Image 1 (cartoon, rainbow, N blue to C red):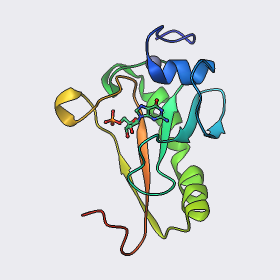
Image 2: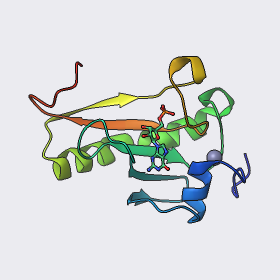
Image 3: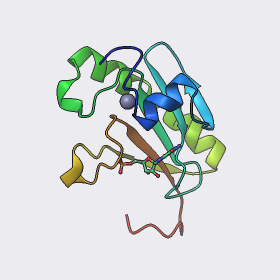
Image 4: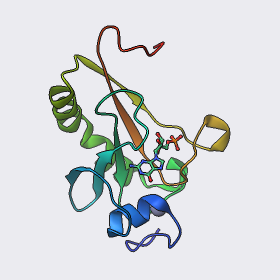
Amino acid sequence: TTREGHPECIFCKIIRGELPSYNIYSDETCVAFLDLFPATAGHTLLVPRAHHELIDTMSPDQVAALFARVPDLGKAVKSVAGAVSYNLLVNNGREAGQVVPHVHIHIIPRKPGDGLIR
Ligand code: 5GP
Ligand code: ZN
């Protein structure tokens, strides 16, 4: 939970610039970059700079700061992707489908006929 992050965490490595990413947005509390295996074009991950495996250990203020970026970022992602809607998704824990153990919000642009079930 330090600002320097976890030494082995891939999202902390992206934040530190040790792994490449296609950066979408960055500020003092969070970053956003394209998902490497996008569900749809423009699939973006919004990630707090602080390393937390689960949302459970974040303070309400940290969670609020993260979600506060959703309206503007979501609109920008939709616009660039030519999408009309988006899904927001947080897989919180391995049994919930979380693979990368650093909190992240999926922003998944949606348009008619994109092939996703829902
Ligand atoms: P989760 O299942 O943990 O909610 O989602 C993790 C997401 O991170 C997946 O959508 C996966 O495609 C993405 N991902 C995994 N490794 C990397 C990586 O090295 N770079 C980027 N940009 N995305 C990644
Ligand atoms: Zn991390």
